Amino acid sequence: MNTDKTTHFMPKNQYTEVSKEITEFVDKYTQDNIGNNANIIIKTFDANHNRWFHIVPFMEDCKGYAEALMRYCIAVDNQPTYESLQKLSSYISEFENYNLAHHAYRKDLYYSLGIAWHRLGKIYDKFAIEAFKKYIFYLLGLSSHTSYSPICYSFRKCTTYLYQSLALEQLNLSSPCTFNDPFDSPIISLLDKNDEIAMLIKSAYLDCVKISCFVSNVMQPFHEDGNILGEIVRNKRKQEDNTSEEFQNELMWAHYADYHRGICIKYHFPNSLTSLYSEPGTSVKYFRDVQYKDDLSVLTEKDSITIEDAFFAKSKAWKYENELRLILCDPNSTGLYDSIDIPNCIEAIYFGVNCANKDIKVIREIMKNKELITKQERIVNDKRETVETRTPISFYQMEFDSKKFGSLIAKKLQ
Image 1 (cartoon, rainbow, N blue to C red):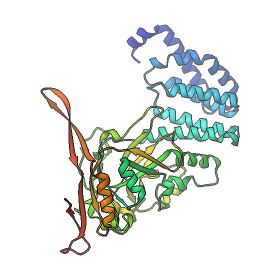
Image 2 (image 1 turned 180 degrees about the vertical axis):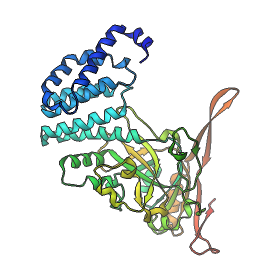
Image 3 (image 1 turned 30 degrees about the horizontal axis):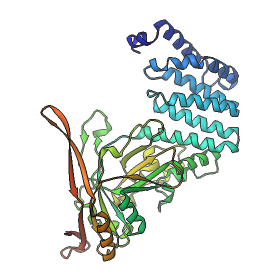
Image 4 (image 1 turned 30 degrees about the vertical axis):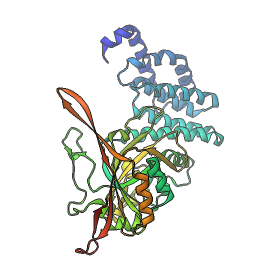
């Protein structure tokens, strides 16, 4: 703690006195004895809440107050009433809105609140699901790790749904439960069991977590050897022996672009698309590469799994996809689908070998007045300025390479 700051805003002796009370409260009531002392814990915390919370802005990490609030939360969970849970919810929301409150505490508090609402009765499960959404929001916020702007590709069928997303310049995302591979995003199958809490958390996941899938042959930048202080590795290919471009992936054309009748979109996303460690009322969005594993059965045998395994793990049978995912967690979202605005993020469109002329015509008409806008910061005369570049969208027609069986080439259209 910075004592100078504390003295400036609050008398030092007052801070020391209140901080000591909180520490004694936390030390006195441990995980083992909360159940037997639930009444006194609730009464003590309620009686001192205003004084104790008053010093939170002067605490560097809020740890003391957060630990006290966690003990109060567990005590309420032991004998929940509608009134006590309403009060607990207000305390957690108050703490959540303090910007230095650590995500880990927010996550644990909302998890405990969700369990407490369910314990009160099934008629309150809607409150439990809302609390679990916040738990998931902070869980994913803790795991977000990159705001880099990727260049990536998406293979699509030519449908009215596609035309609409191109016209509106929107990106569509869907719940992992809609994916065609049951081992894709194992968190859903892991929670699909005869356990009421697990099913409520699953409902929360289905509402607030959406994913959009892309292809990128280049890994997202990462720290060498996992050391956050180490050198950042950039432009490393996922398969060193594969030098073809993403739009030349014949299997992707066959599986995801309607047997070459669809299109491949090249995106260039800005850093601003992602949002890391967001504050209450916002969403978390970030990119992460899919990891391909030999054995995924172990995932369903664990009581808990990492976020990487939950949403970014697939069987090695899918390795040819070189998948990159954008994950969105919005605790205010409902339903299996969502969309976000992505103006001026398309760099090129590749039409499949068998793409119908009418689809080519419609898509080019939709995109004729749109362009890619990229921004880059540079130093000019010791001042930082942003340079904006506008580029017309390029169109290509895919053809089979007559010189190499099974290969594709792209011919630029005028």
